[in-house]
Amino acid sequence: MTATSLESAARRDRWVVLLSLLGVTTLAWVYLVDMGEMATMAETMTGTRVTAATVVDFLLMFVMWVVMMIGMMLPSASPMILMFARINRNHRNKGEPFVPTGTFVAGYIVVWSGFSFAATALQWGLQEVGLLSPLMASTNAVFGGLVLAASGVYQWTPLKHACLRHCQTPLGFLMTRWRDGAGGAFHMGLSHGAYCVGCCWVLMALLFVGGVMNLLWVAALAAFVFVEKIAPPGCWLPRIAGATLIAWGGWILGSAL
Image (cartoon, rainbow, N blue to C red; front, side, top):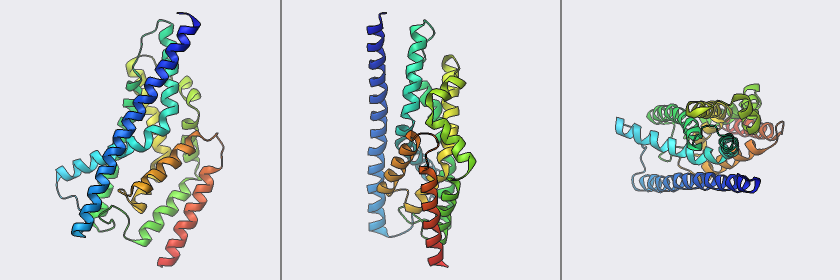
């Protein structure tokens, strides 16, 4: 292939990946909007606490969390996914076996699905003890303040910044962890997902403060995660956000105690 045709193929691949990510993310948000409307209607009509009473309820809640994590996290993972597609295309041009980009994405989603299971179990427990409203937001000021403060403290920890650096440097991440074949692509997706969870898991706990079904709150967190990951390594944004969360949590705790 000529240089022009290679460039054209790479551009086509990039658009295919981008449009695929956009399509999946859009479907996830459509689902979340529908779930949010249903939760609001349930709260308005009954005014009672929504509890998870059966295995079916737990599974539906788990599906909601998985879809929500896809809608929130895929956009922030797009630089890494696009870089994988680019390197993968270069390998294919050299005659090496081609691996669909979806294999890498599948590994990433598997990790966030594991996180979603843990979040579902936590939500189940919080609902059982009455700490969440029908819209799955905190009903206890002390609980909300502690979650905010803990999230802020984590923004300053070495673990947070070590995981964030991997997310902010897609090329470096892939070049040092590249594995050939479908199994290698899936493993790299798992690895990236693990660093991503390590970076963002405490931020996801903030969903229990503002409301799991509060779509403005969900969108705000998703936007912050995206900006945080595309920011240059060493940026003070995580620490500024951490200080803000600590102050916010402290103010709530001070008002409640």
